[in-house]
Length: 195
Image 1: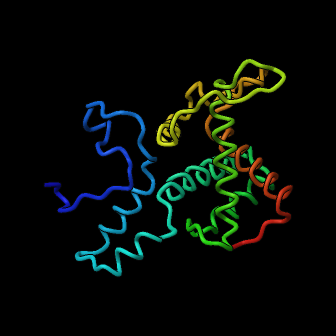
Image 2: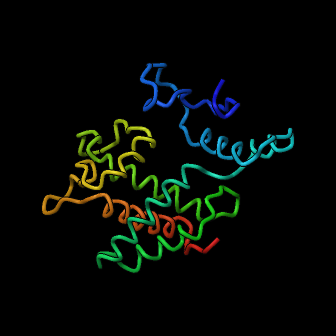
């Protein structure tokens, strides 16, 4: 039996690959929902049927909890270095106000999802097809891999291959992803508002 006294599943990989190297296939859901369910279960010594119902529809996001902090820390580091601007600060402020919950009127979730799309495209730009007429991403690693990559500020994956005069690092790519998300949100939905 597990140490915590329960088994929780949201169709994620059942074993942590860092802890157990056995290969169990590749068709697993992302780990984020499973992490959130475990977080909720750990907050209660006993779980009722009603609590389980609430867990099933809980709009919280472990993914957002992890990645929002990464975006905000990068924007703050660039700000301290004098390498930020008003647009990045505004995007970071809006994202920082978000409660990390996916509810119908929550505009922070929209900005976050757009920032994640930008981050994925900017990080894995090397994985685009060489077709210059219609470049498309062939495949990208899972977001859990992307999250682990955020711990390595100098990884060559952060460099934007379209720039030849400089080498971008993690914080620049994260901040530019925030900027791109804010611009995309404005173009699609108008001026953002605080939640």
